[in-house]
Every structure is written in structure tokens, then in C-alpha cells.
Amino acid sequence: MFWAPEILAAVVPVKVASAADGSLASQPLLDLAAGQIRRAADGWHAVLRIGAVDHRVWSKDPPVLGTSYAAELPFDGDLEARISAARRLWRAMNGRSPGPAFHQLSKQRRERLSTAIRALDAHGAGGSYRTVAEALFGKKRIPDRAWKTHDLRNRTIRLVQSGISLVRGGYRKLLRPERRDD
Image (cartoon, rainbow, N blue to C red; front, side, top):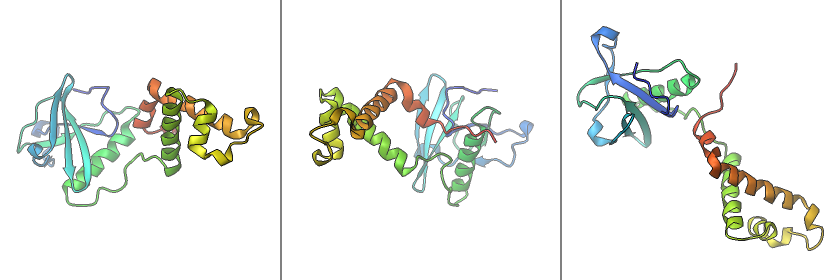
């Protein structure tokens, strides 16, 4: 097996299909020349744009035009996400709607992440928590007195801390779906 553990769950690992592994019913992977291909230390990465959706594939070996490929999905903690990515690619290759992505952040989560980055940026530029809060929530919502115990002060501090956590590597958690233990 040619598995590279650093490949993200949304990337479909592929290999050239052969009669020996029972992959005769596999499909050509479209025209790889139409996608974006790059070579890396761990193999070949391609982004295939089918319709309005980008599909990411990875192969240890260089791509071969006109060859049929099969997905190779290891039984690891990311299996469900990989199956979803492979299914979306297969549907798109067959002219069908790929369907929803396996892992999408809710609107509320996206807004909180955006606010955390803005809070960190303002704080990193030298702004006090009060100044950051005024920029994020409006000056009218910030009290002249009782700032030390106000809920927006605590919220601003948590947002800055969340931004720091993202910068220190927490953003990687966003790239992997939460695992469900059914």
C-alpha cells in the first residue's frame, strides 16, 4: 500500500487500476491536464475542477493520461470523510451533482472564527481589549463604567485567545471533520 498519512481526509487517494486488483470497472480520471497538478515529496497532488466544485486527488505515482484509476481508501479514522470525498468525485465524473460536502462549518462557527481572527489582529496591532471590543461590537455597547466585569470584555478576551489558538496550530482542527463515535 502506498498510503501517506499526512494527506487530508477530503483528498481522494488514487492508484492506476489493474485487472489484478479487480478494478476493471474503474473510470478514467478525466483529463488531468485540465486540472492543477503538482509534484510533492509524498507524491502527486491534483485539483480537478468539475462543474463548480474542486476535487482533490493524490497519487504516489505520476499521473498517466487516459488511464483508469481506482480510489484506495485505508481503514483509518478518516474513512468516512474519504468515502464521502470519493463518492462526490465519482458523482461529478458521471455528470451528477456531487451533493453536500462531508464537513461544512456552520454559519455561526464561520462568523466566530472570523471575529476571533479580527480580534487577534486588532490586539496584535496594539489595541487594548476595550479598543478591540469597541471595534467589534460598537462603542455604544461598551459601558463607561464597569468595563472590568462586563460580559463583552470577557467575550473579547476569549475571542483573542481563540485567535491565538488558531495561529498556534488550532486551524488544523478545521481541516479535519470531528470524528463521530456511533
